[in-house]
Image: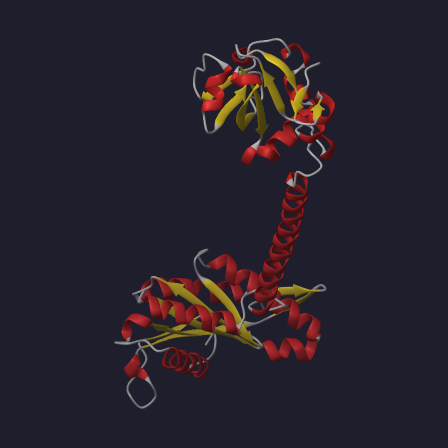
Length: 346
């Protein structure tokens, strides 16, 4: 690397040239490498000096130059190092000394980030006037900021999801609450899919609170919630809508039979004593039911009103019973479809 580049008035040696152009190549007329900038030499290895260009690089444009002059004739150069990681370069070549030798200036182009990573380059490997390091710093800063924004966004989404879950969940039983029930009811009505709406109220619950205290009452509600979840399908929604009242939405139900079986199973389970601090709590369940398919155009308010009437009809019939109501079965319009007592009650 002892060549000098002479310009009118001064001579530019390899050191100053390498400072200005850290990735230059000096090629003789036969395309042999006579000298290279310090950064390029770091990538190629010192054994590249004196070697043919095509033994160090795979040329893509021009594909097979016969002499250095051919490189200077090409508007743009494209080449890759032959040794891994086969870093790519783009560049330009200008003729020297009467056009026989050429000076090639290379850059990484858009692959600069990968090159810096693959070869462990730093700002000292680039010309002082090269903005690439500043651009890399900006890119890294942007990536860091975007990463933090994404993390913040994930945390916010998580917090929003948690807040929504809390807003839709009954804190005592862990069941969904009235808001969740109303939302799911609206979704089912909008979908046109048939469903059953079951309203359940605990009988004799006040006596548990009065005799054993509210701790016993809370325990009973939690256990009833557990029983209800265990009694229905995963696709069904069990909700506590207030006090000792529960509403269950059963999608896909069009006949009374499945609801009668479920209601009997629930009432049987609820009637079993629930032990609190060694003392049994005796309750029962009254249930009202409506089927959406009985309505030409189901409406949430009408369904909730009718199932409420069905529930209180079950209570008036003796408690521990289930009543399935049809739209024309409202008081004064005829009798209920079914009044089903619990075994041993009423």
